[in-house]
Length: 118
Image (cartoon, rainbow, N blue to C red; front, side, top):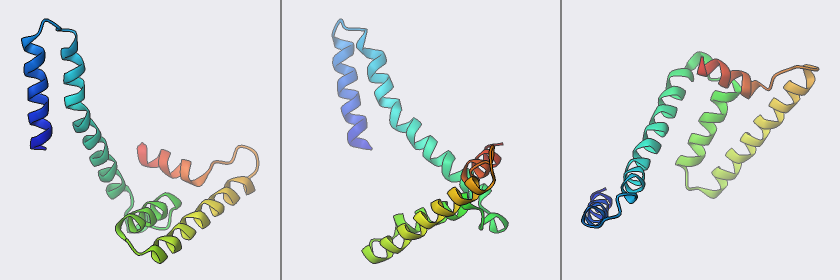
């Protein structure tokens, strides 16, 4: 934002006017951190948008992503509670599926996430 940029410019001006050159990398890192975080969030959104298509909508990872998006979008406490119950149920189903598969079975969330990252 403009306020952040102005504050960063003032700090950078003060540092440049002082003899403390060691502080410059720290200020630069602070100035770039929000951009990196924003990029990571954007990349994650793009990844899920690409992966969670109609044919994958019933996979646990995509169901979870859709439920969390709905939960984030609503302000109704009752609807949020119902969505939280659905998420919990999804976790329980995933545990049952991975435990029922015997030794070496993979959690469906982990499998879907690994497939998505390939």
